[in-house]
Length: 239
Image (tube, rainbow, N blue to C red; front, side, top):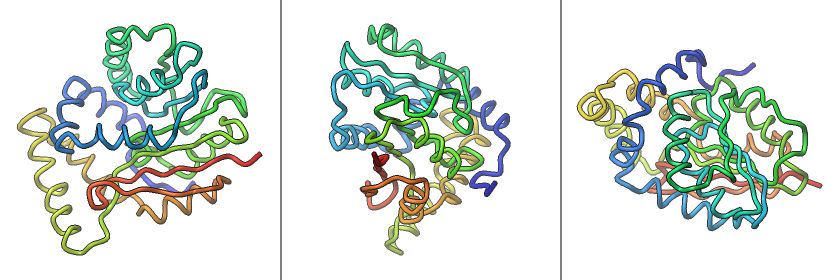
């Protein structure tokens, strides 16, 4: 196994359990509110069909899970899976508030080893979670395995700006300011120091596109956001 994140999964789950109550607030603060715009852009590009059966990996507090359910409509169904029980508890509150309990099922589980049959879902997504798994290539392979032929695999993840000036500012922001905000706002310096570290250490957008191709996906392409601070990758499973 080629490790893309060397922090043990149990430690990662505990970390997200601790920050779950403040997670949404911190996301809005760190991204200056733009992470929601990124997701809307991705959903527009995906064009999820009514009646779709979707899987949202590392679903966290459920924002993308809910967006998928709204796009799939009453005839569709979405499974949200996450390793952190506390994140799922927050997601459950949101699902109930949106009155989508009949369309969304939340499961605790490991994205590295999906307990679903081959060729099950029309769409499989992962948002800001691929950098937190031990082996991103294995997770992509699992996503490809459980998606139907012709189905979509989509990843929205932090990335690394290519412009040297922008990259220097990005390093200052994520390397120093984000952990400080984590300490002041969420009272979890260690957790947000971990998150900035995984952001710095994760693969580039070009490398992730190559990993999509290596997993067997076709029509692979990506779109950068905020001068490269995040990127959305898209691919389809061949028939």
